[in-house]
Amino acid sequence: MIEDDGSGIDESQLSRIFEAFYRESTARDRNSGGVGFGLAIAHHAVSKHQGLIQANNKPDGGLRVKISIPFVRA
Image (cartoon, rainbow, N blue to C red):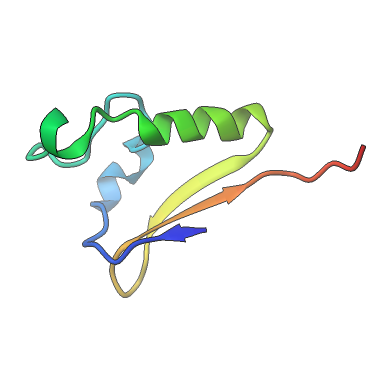
């Protein structure tokens, strides 16, 4: 689980943050906030391992990202 102490993300935008090129804040540009690939790459990698990546806002503020990948013993 990964957490931050920022202001979180508008609830209506949470389902979109794993889309390529999507940036929640229009105030951010390539120079100040990247191009919107990081979470899309993470989503793709986790999905390839039959895992799940989810994001939600913490009750006391900030964002929480949870990654679950199944363990398979060979």
